[in-house]
Structures are given as structure tokens and as C-alpha cells.
Image (cartoon, rainbow, N blue to C red; front, side, top):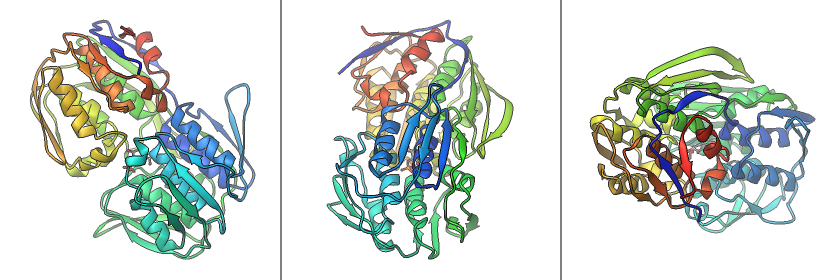
Length: 434
Ligand code: S3P
């Protein structure tokens, strides 16, 4: 356990680049490992979660090499049984996407394991549709699980949750069959798999239907190697934007950050709450919209998040809840039940951390109500429950609160944003080990 303390930082601000997007980094490695030829990936995130995916695709037989400039070269091939279990660490994206990608290799046998947190997260949401397609799994609803790949059939799957991990697992499995593959989500989740599949030459379709949004694979499903550039991660930028929004006089510019509409819920809410937000140098990179985002402080109003809005800010809700605590008035987050099955029970973790620091917060099974007072007392310890985003959200709140906030364990930050502390310090944020 490595505690860290964030101190009130009235001079926070500046300009920065960002580490690569985590979701897109996982997909780049997996799709390149399935493609024929060698793909070149620039800006790949170097974090524990992405390393788990990199080790996995190597174990399945792909060749991965880094050159001196940090460009990653991946040569794909038909996946074969790995010699050892695939250790997904803390990473749900690794586990769910890799199981989908491996499911269509006939006779491939692989065990999937993870840490305590990942081993308590639901896997039935992907094993159920993958079994329907023809794959076999031994084990229960959680890791460890043993997969045996098979010649797959098609599927028309109505997903009960808006989950990009579920959608992606099915699409990746579907690459190994020519049968019709279609997923209907109740609400649109992040669409990086669909965008990246097109970069690798795979055809697909998207249409709005009565039940939500339908995503399907077309005829052309063979992947050809390509070059990819990974944009900055908006889920990491969110902490810097939040600090800028909360600290009087602060202004931060993050260069080259992903602004895909399936991920922009948090920044849109900050603007709605009163922060000054601007977007410059908007371009398309490897099929994804990217730009420079600037956030500056202003007086913050409370926020209302509705169930339809949740998927576009799913990983940012802990941070948004902390920002809401700094607003003046009552904020409400509805339809956030999925947060109970993330790296920790994030509704419980946020409510407990805010309450400890003098904020009135009420949680139900799938909602959170926060009574903001325009300031947060701070001064107390927060249990991060081994969750990177809980650690970073409360450290960020500590930069703006009246008293310092300590998190009991900062180690999980390495799963997604190893440079967090250094970057916050470079912008004038006070973070210390005691
Ligand atoms: C992710 C999808 C989201 C998100 C996770 C990353 C992805 O999970 O919370 O951090 O890369 O596909 P769900 O798809 O389960 O909502």
C-alpha cells in the first residue's frame, strides 16, 4: 500500500500532452495481432492494463516489438494455445476482448485469470453470447475461466447493458465466421472497435432500431495490417480538466485528446456546470476525432446525469461526483448501477470518500445524490478499494479542497495513468508521499 496526499493547489494550470487512450490501445494490440502483416502503432499507452493485453497477444503467437521512438510493431498470425494462463491483472477490457478474439480459433485452449478485483467482476455477460456462437467455457460467472475455441456460428444478440466490452467481444469473435453477426445495445457505448475495424479493412454497419442501436459485421472480415496513431486519453484528461474547473483562476490545455462523442459526456457536463471549455485543432486521426481541449474555472452549478448520458462518461462519474461536491446545490446521478461492477463498487467508494471529507452524499443501488456546499472540507483519508479512478478522483479533489486529502493506496494508478502524479506536479499540483 502506497498512500499519497494531495494538497490545496491554488496555482494549478498549464498545457500538456497526454498518454494514449487506454481503450484504443487495447484494441490496437488485439486487432493488429489478428491482422495479416505488420502494423505500426504510435502513442500506445504504456500502463499495467495495456501490458496485460500485450503479453496476452504475444502468448497467443503475435510478434510485438518496440523501436527506440516508442513505436510498437505488431505482426499478426492465427492464434494458438498459450503455454501459460493469460493473466489479465486488473483489466476487464483485456479479459473480455481477448476472450472474444480467441473464441473463434478452433481447438485453441486458454485459461484466463485476473487479480482479486477482476476475479469478482461479471463475465457471464460475454460467455453467454460467446457460448451461443459455439465457444466453450469451463468455470462459473467469474475468472478464472477456461476457454476452448471453436468454429463459430453467427449471432443476433440483444445486450441487456450498454457495454463496449460486450459488444467488442462479440464483434471480435464474429471476425472468425462468415455467418451474420449483429448486436443491439440499449444505448450507444464507445465505438472504438467499430472505427478501428474499418481501419483494418473490415466492413460493418450501424443503424438505429426501436430497441436501441444495432451494430453488425459485413461480408469482408479479414484484417490487413495498418498504421495507427493513438490519441490522448480523455478519461485521464478528465482529472486535469476537473482540477481546472474546481480551482479558482486555474486553466489547463490538454493537446491531442480524443473527442469521440461516445466519450465526451464528462467534458460536456463540466461545461454545463459552468466551466469555460474550448476545443481547437480538431482533426481526424486513425478514424478518431482528436483536438486540443482547454478548461478554465468558473462558478460551478450542480449537475443532473440521466441514464441515457451515463455510457458517454461511465469511467468519469467518480470524478464528476467530486466536482459536484464543489458546486453549490444538489446534484443527482441516475442509472449508474454499472458502477457497482467496475474495478471497485464505485458508487459505494465515492459516497464513502465524500462523506469522510465532510460532504453529504446519498447512494442507492443505482444512483447518487450529492449536496454541494461550494467547498469541500477535505482533511481526511479515502479508501481507494484498489481502484485507480477512485485514487485519482480523490487526489484531484484534494487539490481543490480546503484541507489535504490522502488516499490509502496509489499503486492502482499504474493500471491506466502511470504518469498521473508527475503530470499533476508539472502543472503545479501538490502531491506528496506524506
Ligand atoms: C471499456 C468499456 C467500459 C469502460 C472500461 C473500458 C472498453 O466498460 O468502463 O473502462 O475499453 O471497452 P463497459 O463496456 O463494461 O461499460
